[in-house]
Amino acid sequence: MDVDRKEVLRYLGYRGAEADEAVSALMEDCIQELFRASEPKSLSREYGLRLLPDDGIDGGCFQAKSKNLRKNLAGCHGIILFAATLGTGADYLLQRYNKLSVSKAVVMQAAAAAMMEAYCNEVCESLSKEYRERGLFLHPRFSPGYGDFPLSCQPGILDALEAGKRIGIKLTEGFLMLPSKSVTAVIGVGSTPMHCPAEGCEACGKKDCAFRRE
Image (tube, rainbow, N blue to C red; front, side, top):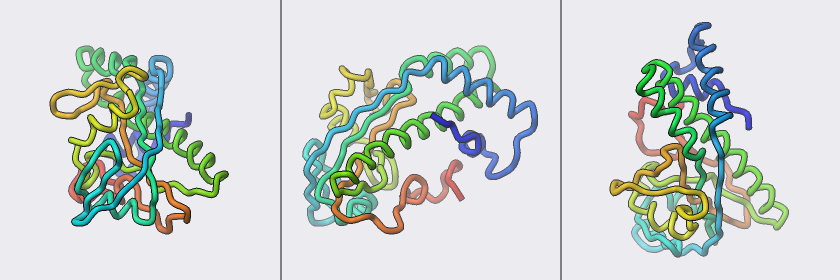
């Protein structure tokens, strides 16, 4: 897994600027600690898909109204439910440095976010290759919390994947995941390639996010 250092800096708010020597060294230290502490795991499972009136989506284990997700799923006949986590070791480091060093905690948080993204990209690329061999194509993953796709869909996705039992992802009452460096997503499955795919910041309607890619 290759962690994009530019992504770490983006999470730190650098927006294309270069980090000084001290920040770069701290970033490398955090990334290496995360590699030693993390235990990345993922799950995926395919479901049927029904697109309903008024931006409604029936993914089998969850139902939602989301204009953004529906646009992402245009032309799809099915979906893949996806969940991934860096495990409790990453959370332990974050909690530890929150007590010991605020500056290192901030960099560790950014490095963990970039590592989570890198791991998800790696797994999803493997899935995409597998489906292409079957003549099928995957759309970019789209997570609850992006745009108007509600976090309230998290329980249905995690329950369908048995993520609590299999890879240890739990939910708080506010639908946030524990370990904190965990991700759920919906990935569209179609018979034709998606042109001009939108993912991540490009697919999210929140234009004023401090971490938005420019």
